[in-house]
Length: 121
Image 1 (spheres, rainbow, N blue to C red):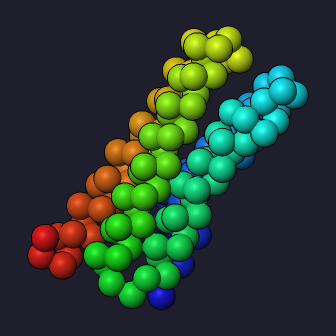
Image 2 (spheres, rainbow, N blue to C red; image 1 turned 60 degrees about the vertical axis):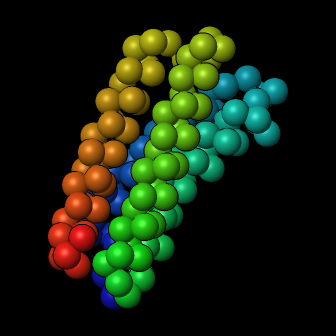
């Protein structure tokens, strides 16, 4: 079994989730069960899927969970864009978060490729 806490992508995803929580706390109270909640769940899903996938026995299964984590990161990206369009965050804030998410997506994709090479795909 792999120790997910040692993976840089997991560490980075936890920081992103924390930052998303802090950011979304500033959204209007009317968004508590709307965009704030969706954004928080998607951000937490990134780290959670990395952790859950690490418990899978095969590299192929682990890679699949990492793909799901990337999918969740695209959800976060989309929701941040919507938050900017609604006026909840500035363009500067959006760009800062997107830069971090894009780095995480790239690193996760590289990890997936490494896992796939290990099994000959």
